[in-house]
Image (cartoon, rainbow, N blue to C red):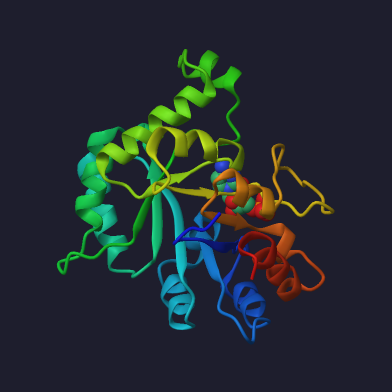
Length: 236
Ligand code: C5P
């Protein structure tokens, strides 16, 4: 399936900057797209983002904002000055919050990083969603509706399970982006991920970007694992 977008994003789930740089230094010929999450951002602050960017990497800043619209708008304005390529929020914050986020994220010159919404976290089961959150719909219907809310607000796509990518494309169209974690090689351990897919199957299933952590970061040869992932996902 040919797509204009698509890449493998490595989740930099490391506790400090030193470990991140040691990992990134192992890449000599390529500059992988990377994801900076809460653990690293809260430990090292915005400087870690500036340094990784200065090394020439694209960055998905995964902070999953969720607050009143005005606060999210101001926070997104701060993030827009960090020059990341992609960031995100929780779709459950409402369409009004997502619209405010877009406003805050848009720079004076009209450009902005890509903005994605988390639908339902893949750690939330349908049973818990219904019993604790009192959402009576099914998980697929909830994911589809949250994705449609994100699209209505003007976002570029959603973060979801690779198993839900087809539902999102069905509800929002092929151009609406899906970024999917929970990726494993056919011959590697699932770790704590319960619902996993291989890079090749994720592509066929409608994922535009895959987020891969341990299968690359914990591999004996991370560069070889990254290349294998790119090859399986994009056929490169
Ligand atoms: O090591 P692994 O490949 O499981 O890492 C997946 C990355 O994607 C982690 O950074 C994890 O926090 C993130 N993620 C996830 N599932 C979600 C949302 C984010 O695994 N639903």
